[in-house]
Amino acid sequence: MYCYQRLLKILLLLTVFFVLNADINCLSQEIPLVTDKLTKILNGVSPALKSELAGKELTLGSSLFIRIFKLQGQLEVWLEKNGRYRFFKTYPICSYSGYLGPKLHEGDWQSPEGFYRVTPDQMNPDSDYHLSFNIGYPNDYDTLLRRNGSSIMVHGSCSSKGCFAMKNYRMEEIYTLAHFAFLGGQEAFDIHVFPFPMTDENLYRFRFSPWIEFWKNLQEGYTAFEQSYMVPFITAEKGKYIVDRSVKLAMSQKRQ
Image (tube, rainbow, N blue to C red; front, side, top):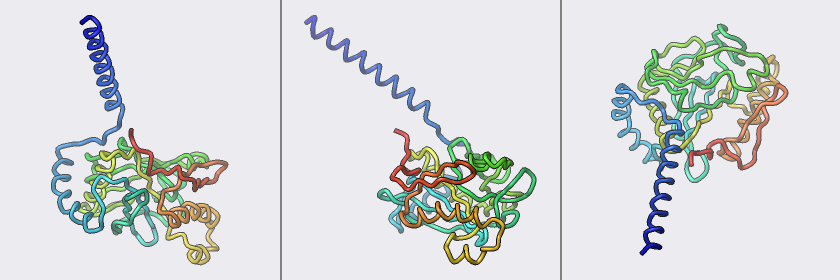
């Protein structure tokens, strides 16, 4: 009887230990902010969005990847399925600022180009521009080159001073996909911003641009995704993006 009671006590202590640790882990996970306004939007958008996704054998809550092409004025949404990303939809960009080429400093009204990441704390359901998320400019590469600026968003309201503005109903869909990707376990989603599709033909077309070497560097990340439909791991070093084509994928970094 004594051994039985002792064993029961040990099991009880272990149970408490694991429950407390599970609670601590849950508290440490970043969860995107939810407001009454966002709840209403999610409830309104989700049913039709789920149906559209199902028609392409995709699901709401899958990991998300976004590409932007400035010249075409397009935002592409890709969702993960079976370890690779599949194209879901192209959304027209209502407005963006500036010309082809990167953003250099605060107040130049220029939209950036490069490789960025969005975490849950960059999501803003109470934005003055309906809904928004900060793309993460400046990133490490921009900082190395002493480029500066702040509050570069993808947002609604179709008005831009350096951001990528969408019509509200399109922004609601994009935001819903991002919100549920975080709830599905994605820690951060990548957003790659290009001047145009980075093909050899397009680079030749713009070969006299002062940004041609920068664009050739961007092409490395573009090509890595085009060849694998996996988001490459990208860092910055000595004023250059370093594209890692190994199997360490940005999209697979999920909460445990």
